[in-house]
Length: 274
Image (tube, rainbow, N blue to C red):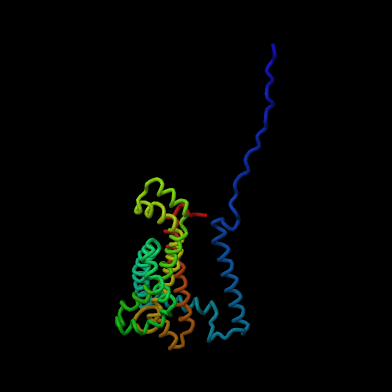
């Protein structure tokens, strides 16, 4: 009677732990830009102290920080901030919302794209900042002309990215949906929109910062209030450090708005994360 041979025991090696790449760690994404900013400011300050930079035309960071400390305690500064934010957000909602709708229609219906795409591209290539004086004539010095300018500036990045996102949808996936009997609306909402969302949101993120640019440009051309008006007034008064402080503040607002949209994107488009 034969004896069964026991199989040799196999020593299993533990699977190597998955490590997050260094540059993708959350603290690195914060610390690295901060370090670059600090080094830049130190070099700027040192060049100002050494006399390489003229403090009248290019104030050192210390002077800009002191000027900003003076501004933040003034009521008119926050009133101007609210006006510019209102113009930016309203223009963004109108421009980005319209861009998503027009982009979805253009990317979905070939006849519409054939008929209107040349005009969309032509209007995109038009220097829309040059329209600011006309908008001022049409809509006056109030908030409407600034909102329209912001909407026009941020409209086209959303349209183009939405059309590109729809065009990038996998043809094999479309064929699979048709073979399963999905209707056009089911294919659009369950395949096309989720697939195109990541590319479309890239345009939305760009659009929000461009809406801020459009509002400021419109305020430069003609307005009675807003951060753009405040920058012009400070320049006329040769308060260069305070004007720089407002510009830096606008950059911070743009960065915060971009981060807000990116947070919304991460919450909504979970399937497209790195």
